[in-house]
Amino acid sequence: MLNKDNVAFSASFKMMSKTRSSQRTRYQCTECGAVQNKWSGQCSGCLQWNTMVESLATPDAPQRFTGWAGDPSSYHPVPLAGVSAETLQRFHTGLEELDRVLGGGVVPGSAILLGGDPGIGKSTLLLQMMDRIQGQGRSLYVTGEESLSQVSMRAQRLGLAVSEVDALAEVSLERILAALKEVRPGLLVVDSIQTLYSEAIQSAPGSVVQVRECASQLVRMAKQTRTAVFFVGHVTKEGSLAGPRVLEHMVDCVLYFEGDSGSRYRIVRSFKNRYGSVNELGVFAMTESGLREVRNPSALFLSRGEDDLPGSAITVIREGSRPLLIEVQALVDESHASAPRRLTVGLDMNRIAMLLAVLSRHGGMPVAGYDVFVNLVGGMRVNETAVDLAVIAAVVSCLRNRPIPRNWILLGEVGLSGEVRPVANGDERLREAVKHGFTYAVVPQRNAPRENYPGLELMKVRTLRDLMALI
View 1 (cartoon, rainbow, N blue to C red):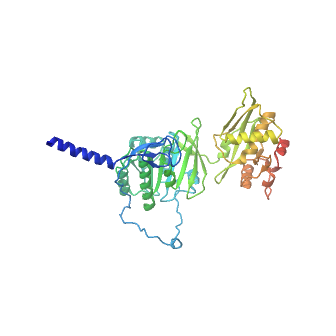
View 2 (view 1 turned 90 degrees about the vertical axis):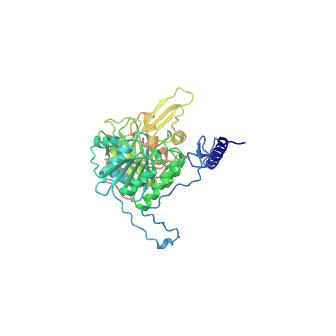
View 3 (view 1 turned 135 degrees about the vertical axis):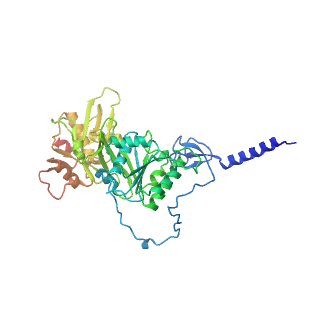
């Protein structure tokens, strides 16, 4: 016969089995969020390796944000032609460089994701922005990594009078939503999204499910209440944003805060923007009193010495809507190894190897027995092909020990057959060169402008041979 203890144990065992069956184990990809019932080394969704993490599948769905008043939204489709297009009324952040990256300012109801290395200045930038917009409405700073006293110490160190900025040290999504209902801010900063968790989901903060759910509810809150939200995101050791990739698809704008640890200059770059152009650039300088805007970045990247030295050439790149002058440096030295070294900083190594092959084949200057090092001054990273002509000119200048004059500017793309191809927005690039006192410009023949620029003489080249003759 079963005694009472056996009956109680049997009942508890059945309850545990039922709970375990309702919370069965599954495996979810940290990159794309794909779910699998069994663990495998490679994700079947994004084909990445070692990204499957164990999690519990709970049948209870978390409660969704439905607005402050609780009124259900309409789910009936309407004709798109009958929907009135609202004019975007942006508000300025008080930082012109940040406004440029955002497309002219912050759009109410937008969700913005800011990522960067630890200690680069993400929290400092957002705290300075919240201080500048005082008078345009209240704002709320939610910190999940620091205490309120630490945030207050930073504000005092930066000399910020954040009288209209509310602060909250909380990681629970439900409590944050309750605080938002009470404060009703026009701007919300979440530092950081990886520290938040929802009590309706049984997984650790920072997991794929938690990050996706917390971001989804906050984005939905932003759209319904027209509250602008800034998310601070962690980055991995590869430099990409941590968490599921769907996080970047949820938000309206993705910004990266870049900078070299040994340099005091910081760059905010836009990789996604639904309210402006992408690949915009904002330059800041880190000082003792916080981040300071750099209004003329071209002067920053052109801090050269007094003498003309071989291996240096100036070109004009374009970041978003801004043309920038940048210096390309090259060092060519005789190689004593079986395989010569090819190292680049700020440029694609495969592109440099291709340009060296074109120089050897069509320029009549073999570099197979030399080590070649190419560097972009100022820590910039460039992907466009307008720097091809300057790279080849710098390599030839160093190899022949003939300096390129300081008042020369070079721009153009070099093809595999040795032809020099035109680049986009050539007129704007030349205007930037004239603004900084350059008097000679080496440009592709098909990039010659229709109007003449006073004080600027154009030297048109068709092939790589023409460039070699000029140098």
